[in-house]
Image (cartoon, rainbow, N blue to C red; front, side):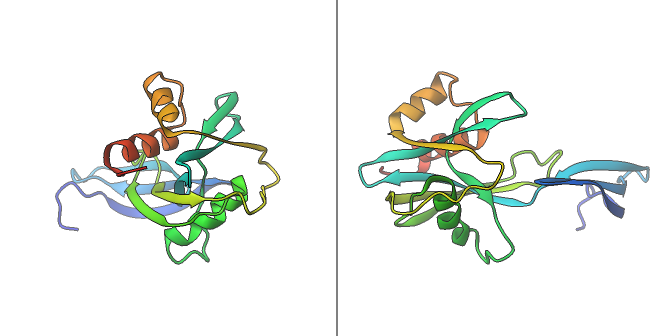
Length: 183
């Protein structure tokens, strides 16, 4: 890059690894010429799915979230695996694993970098229409997920009332409300 704001990466190493993410330490040179270390979370890319049934309800999950100490209501989301050549390929797998639902048509909504000041995460948002409960959940050992359906308007109301706390889900619902078209 030729932009005068670009930092030069002199060295990069993984300082800590655990299931779900790494902490990467880069040695960088700032445009001023000063050098420093910069740490960030590396967790890769994920899909976030707004699954709509044929009746227009949304398939939602409830799951314990240890960092905030409570059960969290959300839409399904999951990591893109190396076998997924395209993020859209991941949607059906993640949706069925977490909810037991299979999607009909899948449409890309948007892609965001939710915390690019301290993480390299990339979220690819999709709406999955005509979802049907024809599959079975296939949860990871550390997942306990309750599945239910709710009206889309109820999720919009939950966002308005500060009751939809999961950021990925909040963005999916509000983005779809603003730009997603007909439910």
